[in-house]
Image: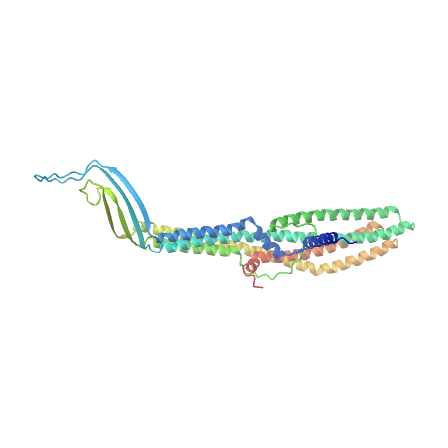
Length: 434
């Protein structure tokens, strides 16, 4: 009798195993790796921190337009007080005490601050934009590191595939020579030589698999996923890269210049007249009546006009400092564009070199393969020995490997051009564009 519970457990176990197998062999693409690496990088947490800090600072700056309340107090002792130098018969005119006290509160309300509050908010937002774009610059650099790891793993995959072909060629020769040994047509040492070559190829495969697993582990740390030997990387299609520079560094320079322009407007605002209302109320001895020795309450208010004059002494120098700062940013941008153009030219030269090499790779592989096939037939007929056949198998293996390397090196050079020009940054910022 079939146990329903056991059947259910068996089905569940098989489903879990199939799910694990699908997870392990799931493909991983280059764009996906770059997106996950940028999302997983610890520095990305600064985005929210910068935004929150700017929000708090803007909110605090906005409170400058609210009434400002201050409470002050003082106690003084003075060596002399004001006296009335008149004596009136029958009247005692008291003299003021030399110790005097005052406690009062004052409310100030800005009517016109020259635009300081508004420009202060703009300066905070401009500074936050600069920090956010500087963060984009750092995050963009991750793409280059991911590209290096990703294409390195693809090259190891290609080398493993070619190593497998090499082992098959050696095995084919080994089968031929073993048959000849069995018939007494060849020496046992001939088979030993090919067996040694097969073992060397297996050792090379072990080394390549270990290097691949180590690279997958590093890539997994970048993207925040656990990758193992079953993880498959998809070979990306050749990119369409624009040579027009569109790097995030250019946005960083532009935002710095915007911040300098806000600073210029702030300089002008600091030297404008300020107008506001004020009200002061408190208690003191003496209060407003300077001839009273009693604690009295008082208040007074009015309009206050402030015209800063001393700021004009340093205005020109401060403007000159901002001009120098902006000129420095222009120099940095010009240097960056110059170095970027040099790098692009080098990468284009590299890409052209691999394109030219690939034009003859197919012919070389075809010729080497025909020679190897002929060598296999010659080995079977006893015309050549196993050393000659091993040499030809290695020659065709190296030709195939060269072609694979050139293909991947060309593809990586194209993606390097895409990275250097900033095309990948444009696609990241505008995913709808193709």
